[in-house]
Every structure is written in structure tokens, then in C-alpha cells.
Image (cartoon, rainbow, N blue to C red):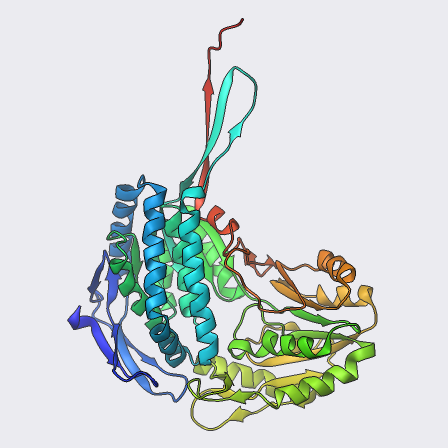
Length: 497
């Protein structure tokens, strides 16, 4: 491996951290067949971190072949053995989580507290997958005394997985955990903008005793590496997290190649709803978490805030006051709440939305500017009195930008909240749980948080309605994405009495 390793300096860690720079295929670090490499930079200060081997179609083909062979070799391994692999992997993540969190902040730009949140959830989710490994069961079906009927849940085979740049290591775990727990093999492409933690974590796969070929990591471009995964005939399932527009392309490619099973975790424009009877202090903090956690680069970000008219002015005043206290800047500095935007393209995209909103006459409550001249930092930005037809109300901005609108009653609120092509999440803030549950029933969203926000748990499924996706991450439901049902019906010769 020494040929494919970089020593990277990470703030607050005394010694340089060794990060793999090769492709991980069949438990070995190897060079790309093309000999091409690509650069990785930090969004904090735009500095060069390292160069990585760039996987292409030839490398995906090799990785898929090894995954295919490994799948059939280990298909009938006892589920409890798979559980032990995953539990050991979780323990290794626990040992390395401080280093991985800091590497994540360096590579992605997110505030360190956000990366630490991610790593804690990674550990707990891998443990959860380990526990589920021997509990993916079928059922018996009673059709009378002349037949015995039962079902089995069987793995799909080789799973292609393509993960995004906003939660690199969390998505690594969300994809690999359930795939391995159910007996599949994996070919995974990390985002080319933020691949370092995926590669560092993959060092732990071999140490955990996971057999060669079951996990293969191929960093590369979407056009070259990603498309090869989508088209490969030995890959039977695609799991993709990213934008809705690309998700549509993924579905088309999956259908036209070999009708791959698909799960998609896509975009969102989630309403975060504040009723007159909310507990104001905690609600304001939930609004902050909803839109400024992870720099707003969250698919379920509560970017559309709706406030009931009786408390509207009070919320505006308190929200602005609390936002002014947020520290934006270097993720490693004490007290930093919001770090850098992850990529230069996304940084420019966010600033573009802000400038167009200003020109369209949107009222600016706070923020609206770049911070500094180095790195990709944006002020927490809020527009208020927003009409429903504004671009910033309709589009997923994927940054620290929120719109605030007013509503009178539940009927008006539900109409506005559901007036979106997306349906990933929603938040409700009220002290009346009867009202909260009634509104939750009417919202077209895969996750509804009541008096909290971005409150993920490894046992609770997460996924979207409408164009926000297909299938679920985490919880028992995630394992359905990686299995198929076989029904066995046996005729019996039961003697009559």
C-alpha cells in the first residue's frame, strides 16, 4: 500500500495522517488502468490536499468481476458471521472516529461538530446493521393442510453505490452497512470532491475481516466511473444519493442496462412549520439546526419556514438575534457552527440564488454575502415575507439560505407546505400534539419531525415522497432495498384421518 498513500496534515492532530490514494479492489490498493489521477482540495482554504487514482470503466469492470465472484463465494455465509464483520467494523470506526471526523472537516469543509455528529451515527448504524444481519427473515403462509408455503429474503448480488459530497462518510455507512448485512457485494464510488474519508475508512474493512471482493471502492468522475457502474451487467442494484435531476438519469440507465433495482435518496425543499403555541426558545434553535447545520448542504434542510401570523414578528426578531450569534469560519476553531460550502461550484450556486433573490425584490432579514476572500464561506441568510412563486421558495438551494412565509390556519399551511415537487421531510413546532399529529398526517413527506429537526436515528427509516426518492435508508426498511423475495410452495401428502 505504501505506493498509494498520502500523508496529510490535519489541524489539531500532531502527526500527518496516512490516507490511501489508490483504488480498493479485492482488498488491495491498486492503480487506475488509465494511469489518470485527480486532485483533491480543501474548501476551507482552497489548498491542495493530495492526488488520487481516477477509476474509469476498465476499473469498474475489474471491481465488478471480483465482487461477483466474492458474492457467490460468500453468499451462504451464516448471517451471524456477517454480523460479526459489521460489529468489528463499527468498533474500528469507534477507535478511529476522531481522526475520521477531522479528515471529513478538512476535505468537506463542514464544522467539526457536524462531522462528529456524522461519525457517532456511523458507529451506531453499523452496530445496528450487525444486529439485524441474522434477523432478515421470511414468513410462513397458511393455505391449508395440503401445502407448506414459506418465503425467504435473499441478497441481490453486486450492488453499485454512488454517494454524495455533503455527507461522505455517513453515506458510505448507510450504503455499505445494509448491503453487507444482507449478503451482497459492493462497488462504491465516493464523490470526487470529497473522497478521503471513504478511502480512509476502507482501510478498516480489511482489518475487520471482511473477505476480499465484498467491498470495492472506486473514486472517479461521474461521467466515467459513475456511468460505468450504472451500465455494468454484473451489477444488479444501484443505490444513489444526490440531486433529483441526476437521480432521473440514474433510473433511466438502470432500466436500459439490465433493469437494476434502484433506491434513490434525492433532493428536498422541506417546510419547517411554526405555530403560535410553540415553545419559542427551542423552536428557534430547531430552525437554526434545520437550515444552517452542515452549512445547509442537507437534502432534508428546513429551507422553507412557515410561521403562523400571531407569532410571526416575534419569530423574525428572535431568529435574527440568534443567527447573529452563530460563528461561521474555520471548522477547527472553537465555537464554529457553520463551516465552508463543500465545492466551488456549489458556493457560486448559493451566491447566485442570493443575488437573484435580491434583484427579485425579496426582503433580506439577515446575511446575504460571502465571508472573506479565501475558502467557500457564506453568511447564514434568511429572506422573509416571501411569495410562493419566488425561486428561493421553489428550488433546492443546498446552502445556508432560508425563506420565511406567513400562514393563518392549518388549511392554508398544508396547501403551502405540500406545494412542492419534493417530499423528503418536514418540521412541526407546537405544544398541541393533537394538532401536530393531525398536520403530520396531511404533509407529503417521508420524515416529519415534531418539536425537533434533523433528528436522525439509526433505527428510524429515512427517505422521500414524490421526487425526493425511492426506498429508505436506515431502520428495518433499508434491508428491503437489498433483498428479493423467494416463495417456496411444497405439496404435501397429508394422510386423512
